[in-house]
Length: 377
Ligand SMILES: Cc1cc2nc3c(=O)[nH]c(=O)nc-3n(C[C@H](O)[C@H](O)[C@H](O)COP(=O)(O)OP(=O)(O)OC[C@H]3O[C@@H](n4cnc5c(N)ncnc54)[C@H](O)[C@@H]3O)c2cc1C
Image (cartoon, rainbow, N blue to C red; front, side, top):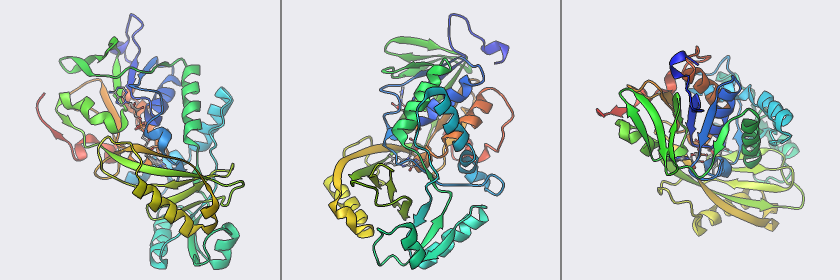
């Protein structure tokens, strides 16, 4: 850390506000470079969107990805090593696997999809009925064409978050639950401290990773962060043995099978504010989608339903940046439907920004200024 940010009185070098997958991965990454980090969460660590998500990890290729797709591509090449490192350090297996994925759509839409993968340097192809059945015997018989994405991955969110928490502890991160940050204390262009009901938390640098709740944290600085909650509902089904091995996607709906016979059916996209209830209509619709696609799921047990609040952004890309006019405040929020998959590269980019290191890929598509409205503080 630069000399001006070295602190006394046990204040950390960096204070991270929000302990979802983004905040935890940023903290883990910073601590890996010897930075003293404290992370505050208003509730329990990793229990919001990062717990609720389905954990699908679509592939990318850093050599071909457009700048906007860099987070996914750079993350794709990091998941394996991150998983291994967390398992070696913590003993927790996050369930990461390259299970492959099938897309079920009209043929024209599949052609477009496969050519977009090809432009991105991602392998995938159209497969016809016999091969579809070889991959997924349980799919409805009227599915006679699909697109096959061999490098599609998945991770089990609750396990990954548990591994990150444990990994952070192993690296000396000071993790604190039940600490809602109410506001920040300023001195000119520097943030001095974050205030919670328990007191002041001073630090050299601050990073807001509050997911769907991030907007209100930046409002006092005249920053209109265009991040809003987008509810996603999920139905968890269970069969005695797995009916599918691969993720199956059909537009915005999907089936994510776990090796233990559990299968997630997702997800809705609803703008209903900070309301995390599940609804009869959405659950019925998701079950209908699942049983239409895989008829044998009609016999599955409904184990659980839940909803989470994605941090939505207008162009579906996160905001990763230093907050303008403030020397030491950063934000990483608005990952929408891609926060799990893009968390490894998000953490690398944020570590580079926070520590004034050269960026390993372009942060431009994720700048606040791409659509930021500011008013004087
Ligand atoms: C149903 C569903 C399915 C999804 N499926 C996928 C998927 O398959 N693949 C994928 O990549 N992504 C998926 N996502 C999206 C992904 O879950 C999110 O993009 C990601 O979890 C966002 O992480 P986050 O850390 O920004 O937010 P969160 O996980 O919401 O974490 C934010 C944290 O900040 C804390 N916080 C907020 N305000 C304060 C404050 N004032 N003080 C202190 N702490 C605060 C909260 O308590 C919370 O723990 C899905 C999401 C949902 C809901």
